[in-house]
Length: 240
Ligand SMILES: C[S@@+](CC[C@H](N)C(=O)[O-])C[C@H]1O[C@@H](n2cnc3c(N)ncnc32)[C@H](O)[C@@H]1O
Image (cartoon, rainbow, N blue to C red; front, side, top):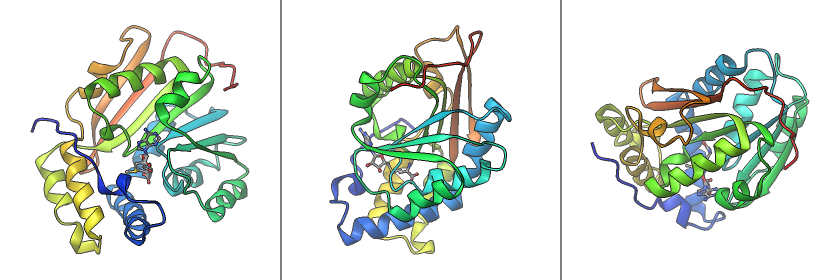
């Protein structure tokens, strides 16, 4: 299946539109069905072990509930983490923010375009960048730019994306069965077609020498990419 990037309806609807609100609820359910939080948690733990990152930047964080689920699964071992939830829409609720604080994690929301933000961030200023169902929004050139920026800003990059496979395409067409609305059903199919397979992301990563790259299928519908800086200290400035 050739990669094909098309607009997603949720990106085009105003955040307060009832169809968008409902679709964001669907997304939480789809994340659970795909096992995204567990895949992200395992990828982070296998890269960092018990050494908690000081600053994690989540790109395209949406309503922040995905990262909160990941944080809850890690908080027992990882203390004093700061999470930056970045999205071009301001849709993180106070309840979600309190969820992070209840774990003892610091949280900041930033409404910004990911490219502009990364372009201005200092070199190696965060320990880890995470992205869930975000990279597939971008075509080849933009994606290359984003990965170049990420490699400059962080020591670890983890992305959990839709897998571009026949099984995932079939799954995306069955979302009506778990009650997803027309926006979610449309976007799910578009997302799988824009998803990743093989070494799609490794091939775009800017530096093949100083980084350890892992790219694989995870669960039934997910494509997981991990880039970890190797051979250098893990002590960034943490000043954005
Ligand atoms: C499919 S949603 C995933 C949200 C969240 N990661 C999750 O799993 O629930 C993709 C998110 O990326 C955001 N987004 C798309 N393009 C962006 C950009 N250029 N900069 C920042 N956020 C962007 C959208 O607003 C949306 O919230």
